[in-house]
Image (cartoon, rainbow, N blue to C red; front, side, top):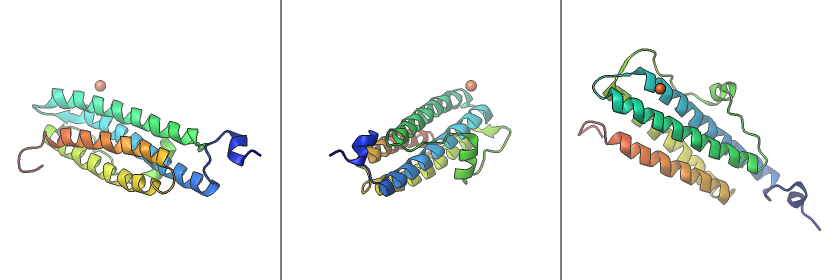
Length: 165
Ligand SMILES: [Fe+2]
């Protein structure tokens, strides 16, 4: 006899687990989209001697965060949980301070990116740990996200003046 999961062609997660995993993925999606919007704002705002390299680095980071968001959202769909990556969902899901409008000195941009990356990584790590007991396949997606964010954090941190890293 077929199980319910086989009949719906969805991965065999219980209803309660399915919802919990979906919520963790949704929260991570919103974090990554928010980070990508902040990154683009900083890409436009940076001024100073390191303008060129930071302007380009931020576009690379934004592309990466958008790709990671896509992987997370598609994992949600794969388990039958519909993700929401629209502006309303980002506003509702986040409590992250916006970037102030206007020019921002290059070293301040580096500090802001490092801090925001570190904060985001810390929150996603907590979700990654929670998923260990719920769905290892979804946890694996967040492991990939954390690994990428922490590599980026190292590269951004390396640009801070010695003694402030
Ligand atoms: Fe641009």
